[in-house]
Length: 247
Ligand code: IPE
Ligand code: IPE
Ligand code: MG
Image 1: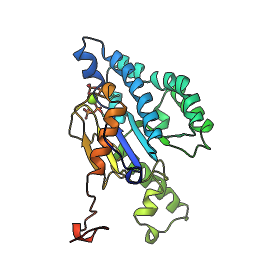
Image 2: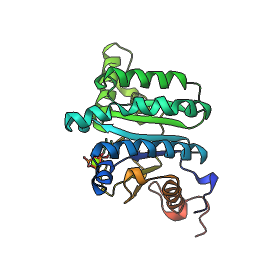
Image 3: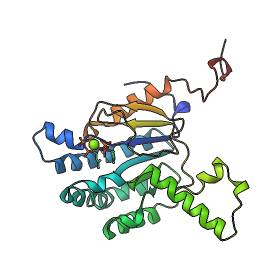
Image 4: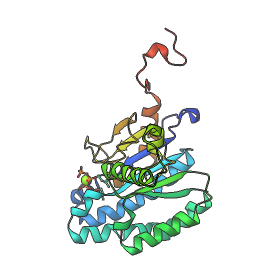
């Protein structure tokens, strides 16, 4: 297993958990089995991320575009958060993790809203891993919603356009405390962003894994982090300008 440097851990890891359907199809199983196996992978990755000292883990569980899938598949996907929290919440609480959510809350069925609210409330004092679920989430929608909130403030006379900068704008996003993404992982091999965290990934390091999500476990996460730690993040500067440069 790769050696990781605890000082060089990414603060925010975001994951596009893709490939459940193909994982199932490769085994001659229904897609629903792939999604259930995907929940087991969530369990393992949350534990591993917490053990490894990652600050924020954001998991893309359901996109706004995923509402266009067949109703039976959507219905199954909307049952999984409840199953996950029922099983995992005690462990998550014991670890001191805090759960948050981003996305269009109003579009979620009542059972999902209820279990999400319950998880958020019961973990609100958690200072360990900040675990963010993106449910009915779309990056463009989040940015438009932020603009709407800002315009409402302006209409109410509480906001002046001259006071707008990137930091202020970010404070109107779904989860203002969410920092920029350091490492964006996409499983399932596709090389696209699929409307995930468009604002927050401005300078993210990208890692596409060929592994289907249900097969992505602690070892794969560790390998992804080791890959991240080999990279040089320049943020527009030259190598020579970076701390520790010898040339
Ligand atoms: C990701 O797996 C889960 C969701 C998008 C909800 P998919 O269901 O997209 O799996 P593939 O991409 O069809 O294999
Ligand atoms: C992205 O996967 C959304 C989630 C993992 C929740 P999709 O399978 O929906 O992405 P596309 O459609 O292949 O871009
Ligand atoms: Mg997919």
